[in-house]
Length: 111
Image (cartoon, rainbow, N blue to C red):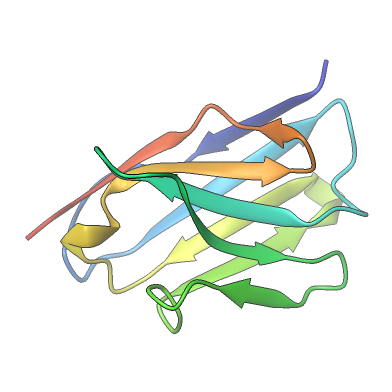
């Protein structure tokens, strides 16, 4: 069964950090881009950033310098390290690989 499962969300104060994980099962992440999206209440889902199979990354301007995407192919898992969090980072975060989406994990940043 093909599945992506996010974890690591939670409640954090502004300035804090969280690390999200995206664990894949039923298929390999090795040859795929791993992308992270987020959706805040009342907003459209937006791209946070992606990591390519070779390790290169791209990020939305709003998170550049604060967020970092990585991958561990041996664990079939992608990661989103979020530092210097702001209240406007509050959203449900989703990982996406090809046509597959996770169920999302909630991140709430308090001021």
